[in-house]
Length: 62
Image (cartoon, rainbow, N blue to C red; front, side, top):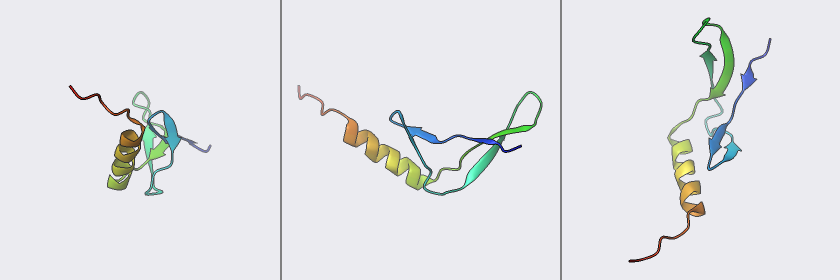
């Protein structure tokens, strides 16, 4: 049986990992593999930060 694959969610939008690699996750109750999640790298964190900065409203000055 194929495992379900989940994607990253950044600022409410699904996006692919830049590494293209996946991690298999196990169900903590029975130890069986149940899904794959993206194996993210520093490039993903930088992309998330950039997206977050681009979508933020500028703060008002005091």
